[in-house]
Image 1 (cartoon, helix red, strand yellow):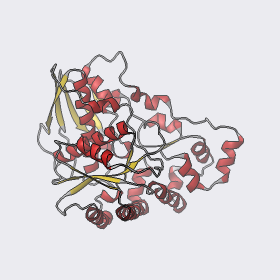
Image 2 (image 1 turned 90 degrees about the vertical axis):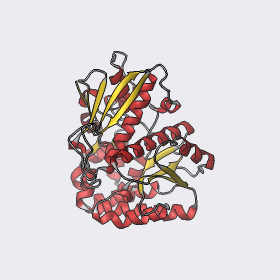
Image 3 (image 1 turned 30 degrees about the vertical axis):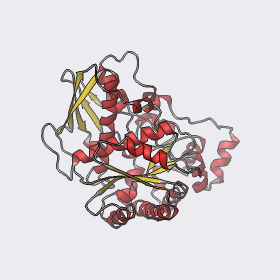
Length: 381
């Protein structure tokens, strides 16, 4: 969610401030409870262990909060997982690499939740054949068999599943300790990934500069910026209706929207883009960046990168650290490729490697959870 502080910084619109303050609506337009009810965990009347596990899996971080998940439960004891082709990001994620990472995070939380229920999740990727490297196939992404196993190893990271957040607030000046970064890397052992991070001021400045230029490229190109604008959910009414996308709520957004100062249409205008461009500056005032690199870039590796990212995010939650992806420089549409190459060099990745995730790392004030669609929107039974 875009924060009130950042909105005040970029909007500069006294009419909005006076309207909200004049009417005393400091508590108007809260996050709708229905949109975040999933973060309370599965309801007591949910008996099917597969559905209970899915109640945690759908909390996975994913690009633009698109939640591109369809799960077929018609086979007893099995969940067949497909990717919702209507929820892709063809402009900013033309090869669906980032979508796959979100799906990998989903599967990792599903595995953890199954173990809590005494089940071993046996995942068979692409049971009907591999997908093309540059598109999402119609065939299943994976088949997950839930096998009773009293010895299923429970993962201590699962304790953070309902607490994990993506934090878009400004980070404070507290340093990230090497021991904390090492702890993040430790929970990725066994996955085909390499974790990296930096607290070096010179490298941070270099990476921040690349991130800002990448942000500028995405916003100034109509097709890529519109892909974000299309999933703006402005005010609680829109959030409750869709329960996905990028949430913007509270009295300032409510009044700005009602007064016609902040809508999807004017977001695409030069003034709207200028406001969006200014949002990046406070996000780049950080003491640490982190990244996840892989030697290969096939679909299975992308799923593993998603598992790695959510595991690091869960560990960060345990340590009291905030994480927030900055994925613009990793996007693969033509105008972004020079920034992608520059970013890869800046984090020390080889030309043959792929930087799957890049994120801010630090401490920040707490944020609420992001909306999630209901289970019945993703389950086919």
